[in-house]
Image (tube, rainbow, N blue to C red):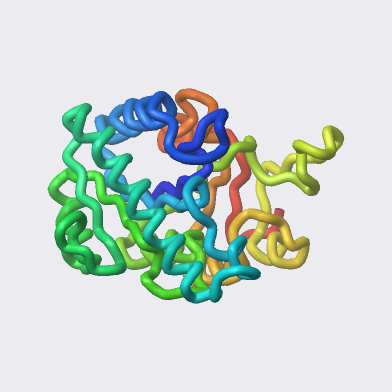
Length: 232
């Protein structure tokens, strides 16, 4: 399985940076999931530190995206540290080479780590500007042969409007890829959704801020919103 976590999820109440308590809580939950015997891979964003696209008016888009990729490496190292303090073997594989802090991303190396029971954290997105970490998550999921992408967010699924602004917003139990694209729902960016659609990769969107939800998602509990190939 592949779990996509937004960088903002690590920020806690402050809304930026890395909250040590939130990081430790995620580490403990991921240890429980790893204990189930799952081959666990992670992709984490960097929005809690720097969001390249948001800085486009001041910084060249490609440069901003590279800065965002480096932010994901910081988050990946923090998550690795939290897991290894709990005796969970972990490897960070970066799409941008930085051998002193992470292994370079090689697909066969990643699958071998997973086979050996190590948690693999994919950092630096795809290594290319103009692609989001959502696209990186979709791509890595295909490459390692994952069965599903778990998209961990701050809300408990996909709604027809922003539930923070519209209390009457309706949550979907399931959606098709085409529905997501046609409705322009903010599940993942269009490139990521199209890649999942082309490869029939289901996506489960759920709230990571509720303790125990990662384990519930992995064990098949009915939470969140399932995006798949059939009609909703």
